[in-house]
Structures are given as C-alpha cells and as structure tokens.
Amino acid sequence: MNTDTSSQIGMPQDQLVVEINAKLRDYVAQRGLPRNLADALLYSGLGPGKRVRPTLVVRSYEAVHGPLTDGPMPEALLAAAVGIEMVHAFSLVHDDLPAMDDDDLRRGRPTLHKHTNEAMAILAGDGLLALSFELVTRNVNDPALGLALVGELATATNDMIAGQVYDTLPEDDGVEGIDRLIRIHRNKTGALLRGSARMGGRCAGADASQIEALTRYADTVGLMFQVVDDLLDITSDAASMGKATQKDAEAGKLTYPGLMGVEGAQAEVQRLQAEAHEALEPLGAAAEPLRRLADDLAVRRK
Image 1 (cartoon, helix red, strand yellow):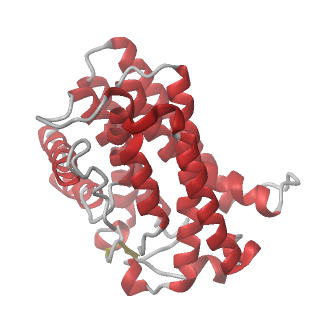
Image 2 (cartoon, rainbow, N blue to C red):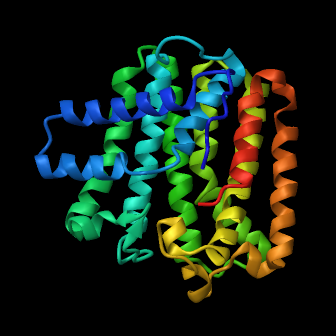
C-alpha cells in the first residue's frame, strides 16, 4: 500500500518510516536485553508492514501543528509514534498464538511463535508492551504531556484487548448482528488507530474540539479499515495478503460481507470514507494528508 500521503505537504513518508524504525531499533539495542529476546522484539517490531499507526500519529500532529517539512520529528512525537507501533506489534504477536488465532503466516513471513517458539512469542509480546510505556516516559520531557500520552496509550491498549475478548470470548449480553460487529472493531481494530490520532493531537497541543475531530476521524477510519480487511479476506489470497485468508468465514465469525453482502460492504467503505472526510472539516487544509490517508486505506489491496 502506498502511504505517501504528504505530496510536499508534511514529512515525506519514507523519512517518517526511517525515523520510526531507527528509534525502535536503537531503543531495543540500548536496553541490554538477552540477545534472543532482542532479536524477537526486532523481528516483530521491524517486520514488513504499512506503519499505519505511527503515520496516523504524525499526520494528526501535522493537522494541528502544521507540516513537518525539515529536520527530524520532535522527540515526544517520535516516542508516541514508536510506542503505539510497539503496542500494535505486541497485539499481533499474541493474536497469532495457537491459543488465539493460531496463524502461521504474518506479513509474508512465519509468525513469531513459528520463527522461535511459543514461550518466546509470549515473552516478546510482553516485552513490546512494557517497552512502549518505558520509551514514552523516558523520551517525553514535559510531565503533563507525558502523563497524557501514557493515559492515551493505556486506554488504547485496554480497549484493543477488550475488542479481542468481544471477538474471541464473547458473553451472551444480547448484542448481536451489526451492533456486535461494530463493537468488536471499534475496539479490536479501532482502539489503536483512535489512540494514534489522539496522541498525535496531544503532542501538537490540540484543543478539545481538535481532539474530538481527530477522534471521530480515527473511529471512522478504523471501521473502514476493518470492512476493507473483511472484503480482502474473501477476495484475495494468502500470497497477496501475506497471511492466511478466509479464516473468519471458516470459523463462523461475523464479518461485514457476511452481514451486508459484498456489494453492501463495498458501499459501506465508500460511506465511511466520506464520513472520515467530513470529520476533518474543522481542521481545514492542514488535514489534507489525513484525507489522503483515508482514501489510500479505502482502496488498499493488502
């Protein structure tokens, strides 16, 4: 997927990814961890991926602060972006375990528990989560901002975990059909996207109305991302996606195409794409990279 949403507006995407990867690599290296643990952390944290969440942190910052056109990104912003990517990597490592989704392939490579073993995958996932908070607290000098970022990161993590429980260990609480599906993915998929946008806004000193606009945008993009994911799961193959496909349907899980049909799900993507644009209206022209990101995610192919 092409995530170069800047087009001379804001930090070039390739520079953004280079800074994110370098910070994650350097931070793990300086911690003096056991070599096999450090290798597992980097295998998961630096694997092939779209870097959507750190991109969303930076683009949300730019939508409030203005474009980052020269020099490296501010240290607090970099810490927020790397921290949320570490949490995302942790979630994928644990999601792939036999006790959860039992997947052997992720991003075209063996999942971590297949590359190493289950014990190391559990420990590496735990390590990524702990390091995400440690990194933020050690790299944000403003105490108030640091507290706000840790709060956002914790909320996003807990909501993401709740979404996984709603999906895999549901209680009979009377919520069914589309309402249940939306609840799952506002949390499982949407929580880290929502947290990314809010953390970027916090780093830029966003006011309440700007945080509200970013939150609405991220919530909408999170649902759209999942609808596209569900469509790709039935229209693409493992070679293209870099992971197993059609597992949700085989497991009898709720999906958007399953509830709406393929055409209905495609129409829902278009509706959510338009809603994401509408959410950004209070932020004006500075939010153009976020608009382009939504458009790109709507037509992604993996």
